[in-house]
Amino acid sequence: MTLLNVLTLYPLQISFTDMAWKKPASSSQESIIIFVVIAAVIAVIIIIFFSGKGRGAGSGSGKSGSGIFAKLALHKRVSELGLNNEQIRMLDFVFKTDQVLDPEKSIATPSLLDRHFKRAYHVIGQTSKSDAELQYRYAVLFSTRNFLESHVSDGLTSTRQLKDDTPVILNHNKGKYEVLVLSTTGEGLAVEYPQNALGSPIKLQKGNNISVLFFTKNNKGFSFETNIIGNSTVHGKNALLLTHSNKLKFLSQRRFRRRQIDIASNLYLVYLEGDGKKQRMIADKRRLTGNIADISVGGCSIKVKVPVKVGAKMKIEFTQGDYKVAALGQVLRANRAGIITIIYIKFLKVSRESMNIINAYVYEFANE
Figure (cartoon, rainbow, N blue to C red):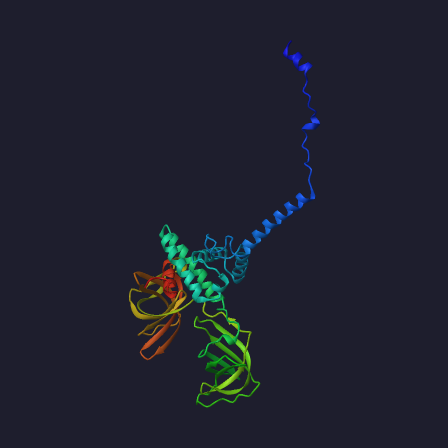
């Protein structure tokens, strides 16, 4: 018998309908169990995100940072302030490096923010693979810190947060009177009673409206409107009582943080040489000397013993630590004080490295 005959006599006894996939019998109880398991998994994921156990802005260990939703909210806030994507990434790096638990609190607290940025500054110094990369990362770090410096209001929202002895300026009937805060407790804000140039108390009536201006230690300006509620004696001094305000208006003042300094510098007058497109700046070989009194990445003030014209362009050179700093600046104004003239200079051109050195000094990040 041939193989063909075998196949003919003994066909496969399998119906094609038997090979189709069949739905297993399901019960309502199994469906409920599956639904409960899925819901539980989703609930766990949401709890992890909101409790900060996810991949937040802090370290990968899960000990720091916020959840993904808090991180997105933070990104939205700082983006609305004006930080660009590069600066936002740097801010994430700063918070992750110092394992920040509460970024919102840090942004509103300059001392905390400085600590986090200082830590990141040193990590960048240790991990950058080339000087070009180092200077670039430093530049982004400081641009981020400077931006937050000028756009965040230190968390002040009420006059009740003012400290005793804070200087404030009262504006009333075109007169300006600088006084100190005596007390913020109680129903009113107590300040020294303002006096005129002769030392006599000025006449103020209950109910008069007054505009008040003050600055924090970080050179941030605020103003608020108030009115007089009476007179009193506080700490043995005549006091003017003003209504408290919960509507402080933040005034963005200096764009860059400034630091006092006393360091020798060399100055060279700069002038243009040539005509039309062939003009170029030439630094005079004659050197002037002076002492820098304060500095920021935006400019400086220098004490000199010779008169300098407002509008003059100057090359400024000085040494900070082991580094030499150079900048091109323009004199904005000059004040004469005896034999000394104080010139106020706006920087026009500064190298990236010099900017980083100045910023590191101003923020006290470098080891001095």
